[in-house]
Amino acid sequence: MTYAPTPPTDGGCRTAPVLKERGQREVFCGLTGIIWLHRKMQDAFFLVVGSRTCAHLLQSAAGVMIFAEPRFATAILEEGDLAGLKDAQDELDAQVDRLLARRPDIKQLFLVGSCPSEVIKLDLAKAAERLTLAHGPSVRVLNFSGSGIETTFTEGEDACLASMVPVLPETDARQLVVVGALPDVVEDQMLGLLSGLGIDTVRCLPTRTAADELSVGPNTVFALTQPFLGETHAALERRHARHLPAPFPYGEEGTTAWLAAIAAEFGVDAETFAAVTDAPRARARAAVSQASEALRGKSVFFMPDSQMEIPLARFLARECGMQPIEVGQPYIHDALHGPDLDLLPAGPQISEGQDVDKQLDRARAARPDLTVCGLGLANPLEAEGLTTKWAIELVFTPVHFYEQAGDLAGLFSRPVRRRNILGLEAAE
Ligand code: SF4
Image (tube, rainbow, N blue to C red; front, side, top):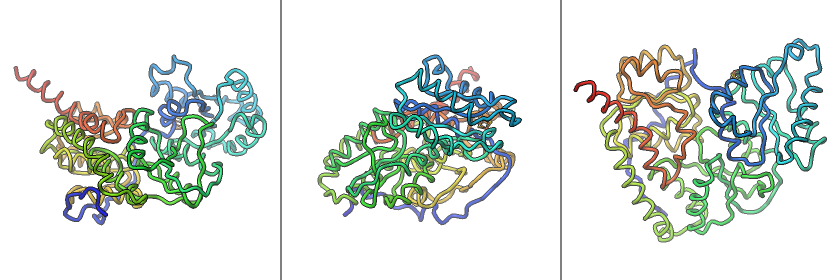
């Protein structure tokens, strides 16, 4: 059964040669994931066990949010802990006792590893077990690493979600689990579309609160909404859940293909699929076409940052008329990124990993109309006359599914339009 024929590509990029590079990297560590995860999980607290550097990173990345009694903090390792003079485990227990006594609203506590806690080999897994015994069942304590040694940017979310999978209760129920932290309003839109298709046993990982029901088992199928969830994918497969491979739900086409993969699994008929998706598809197409006017015919270069690069390049190439020159991703995972690579028109250099100086040389030589990169590279490249889009905004802004497709195109067209306006003003 075909729900929505996708236009053929010229073979796509799945088998294209990949340029693999290792060297100097310009990326965030996984601690940044806490910024959006704590907003999603309303009764969770993230306690980073790290240094003042980690606390500064969180403060600067979270910006004004630090004034709103956020649900994250850093337990700072002092000289005595690092030198082994004090028992860091005892100190941690005391900190957690104080925190939980003061904040009875906390139902899930994540101990988040950092570079310093890893270097001194502080066993946070053992601490989480011990603290779960001490504070359970009202509080569940888990741990994951957000360190720069182990994780890059969005991998922090992946590590967090993967840490939750082994402790989920077992079920035999036939159900769909949608994986990835989406803003509540976007999640509600997605649940509305799936319910329209008649798929009602849908659960989300992460859940909004610890009390929300979520279990997993051999009759669970799961769909990913974010392309950076490789570890969570593996953890769910270890629980015998089955992945539904699909392009990621960015843009009209990506959303339709994502829904179609689920519809095929649940035997939804083509009429129902059309009845549910035709109107929002038309709305999304109109919004994208308007928002992408400034992008048509322009070239784009992706630096590796969030693992969202391949699906976004597919969206920009197919729906916004852009020409990707290079699409760099920190990691490429065929089970996750293959369907998007199939749809990405042949032509761009696909690269994995980074040697930042070499990649900057390629970008300078290509002079792309738009470069998608992290904050550390954006202003220097702007100063060299290149137009840039900060990748971090793509993670913080609602960009998934039909109703956000126009906004997603708008995120890319804004810097191009701004450059045009500034160029005109300068010429006057
Ligand atoms: S976890 Fe590592 S990379 Fe991240 S802020 Fe702390 S020290 Fe820096």
